[in-house]
Each structure stands twice: as C-alpha cells, then as structure tokens.
Length: 281
Image (cartoon, rainbow, N blue to C red; front, side, top):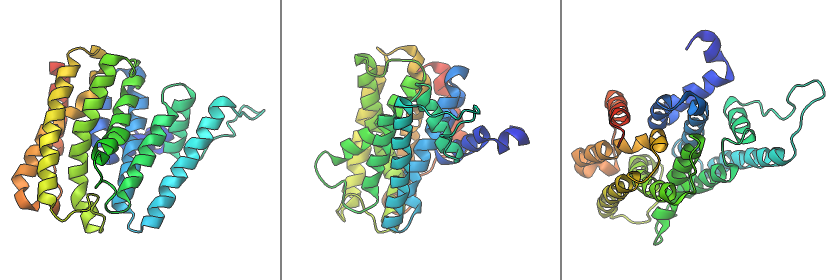
C-alpha cells in the first residue's frame, strides 16, 4: 500500500481490519476483487465493535461507544430509504470517520444488511458487565449475534444467498464454533477488567465446555460446507483457525483464564491460505 492509499479512507479501513480482526482480514484478501472491499470493511467493523468491551475500562464509556455506533447505523438505515445529496454533488451524509463512511457506502450499495450490523453492536453489549452469559442459552445467543451475524454478512458480500437453507445451516454452525473460540480468547482480558461474563468462579469447567462445544460445532460446519456453494469459502476461512486456537488453550492449561491464547501471525496466514488452496477448512 503506498502513502497515498494509506492516508485515504480506504487505507485507514484496511489498516483497522488488519489490526482489529486479522483472521477476517486475511480471508478477505483471498476473496474475489468484487467482494474484497466489503469484506475488509466488515472485518474492520467487527473488530472495532469487539474491542470496545476489552479496551474501554469504564462500562459507562463502553456503553457510550456502542451507542454511538447504534446511532450511526440508525442514520445509515434512514439514509438508505431517503438518500440525501447536496446540490453541488457532494455527499452531505458523510459521517467523517473512515470506517463509518465505508460501512455507510457498503449498506447504501446493498452490500451489507444494516440490521445484522446492529446485531453485532447489541451482542457485544453483553460483555460490558459481568454475568450476562450465565443464563442457559446465552452463549449460543452471543455466538449467533456476533460471529454468526459476521459470517452471514460475509456470505452476502460474496454474492451468495445467506438465507438459503444450505448457507443458513453452515453460517449457524460457523458462528457457534468461532464464537466460542473468540469468547475464550477474550476471557482473560474480561476477567482482568472484572467482567467475568459467565458469572461463576469455576471457569475451568466453562473453558472445558466451550472447547468441547467449539469442536462439535466445527465438525457440523465442515459437514454443512459440503452442501454449500463453493463461493462462500472466503467468508468461512477463519474457521481454519478454530483448531489451532483450541490447541493453544490446551498448552496454557490452568493459565488459559489469565493468559490469552494466541496463534502466531505466520501460522494464521498459512492456515487460512492452505484452507483456501484446499477448498475446505
């Protein structure tokens, strides 16, 4: 990327995607050119929302940050039904933040469902206060509303029908598998902030259950992928990292609730690229 591109809005969004949601960013680079920009925008958006509960110490400030995005999405939704353009031809509705403007353009062009973007914002609200995932079914709802929504948006960006039965089942399983892995990755940071989302001190049992469930959902996603259109593969590539992340948790042992389980950038690049070359995750 040259200096001119880096200073542009597209360059800023690309940098944010690479920093905030590296797995989806890598997958986006392997997508057809026609879908690449929307997938990079999705990676940057999801990464920006996901980091708020982990980086903003004061819950009230985190709420404000998430509400700002809700307001932006409301404005975008309104503009889709009533576009506003200046007589001079300049875009009066520009928000002035590169990522928000990129999301706005993607929604306006029909490349993103604003309701699913809103689902991501609302779902990460449950990591701002401790105990929100303690109820039965709460983890599954969180995975569906966050990672499931992101996978659905990715499939749609590739021009596939995310609502088709074969895609819907795959997206659901993918969201549950990857969602549990990302919860496990976030757990040490959330606990350090005093935001244990599970409302129990027996986190070893929670971690064991999440790991077991993630593997089961990954197997279901792999089975579902056999019946899905091949064009959805770039959106599904982050699933190639589910097993490496889980192995990293195993290596940490009891420290997995205090130390984030990471996979090296090189391994992440290789696993996603190899999954792309093989045509399966």
